[in-house]
Image (cartoon, rainbow, N blue to C red):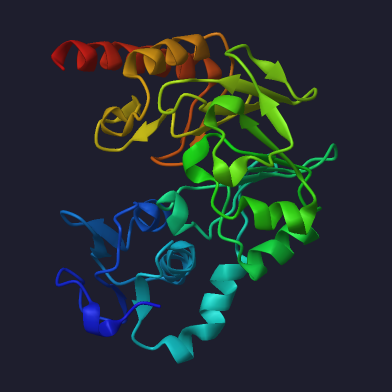
Length: 297
């Protein structure tokens, strides 16, 4: 729970605040950009919400914050609004694909997604095991598959497995002590169809066993492989957070050109949406940027 005694100095005067426990994961800024800003190593309230919609988005950020670093000076009176913000998750993106909210500190605040479909729902990466979210997922049909894009963002995977009896999917190269019980392992770098709508795409680079999940040739759940950068104004990869091999990550990016999709939904970084033809051009720009980054290193 956020402490008013630890408010960061940059907060705008008023009810909502960010405290010094913030890990600067960026969650609040993309959920409520009209309210939150970025200081050197933490977020802060740049402007107090001025409309009901802005306030609702800011309270969704409060709920989603992985470290509980966002607080209200009138928390008791705000409880009904906070409950409404909690109930807004999972939050619909498009075509029955949802952002789960309830980010987990164990994954440095990475986003997770729920795909709701007749063939069985898919949870992509792992949110906090928070009962309001879990009950909402149950109401939407539960979880058949738990797709783990890479070893970093697995968090409460065992709790979701125990609750939903879902089949967890992970690349063998990213197995760890905490995931040795995973039910389905992917090997190699060839794409694999999980069913008629789901394709696992190994993308070694960020980690040895990183994977993307492609849904209906529209949505690419990209883990930490690729995302949109507001600062650069383009699709990019995380050179400073490449834990395995930058050259391999660039090769993996090149192989994505062989797939059609319109959305990139990352764990870290911002989501983006373009027509498929433009998405390909944006990926090509990313490859050019990665090449320049490689030459300058």
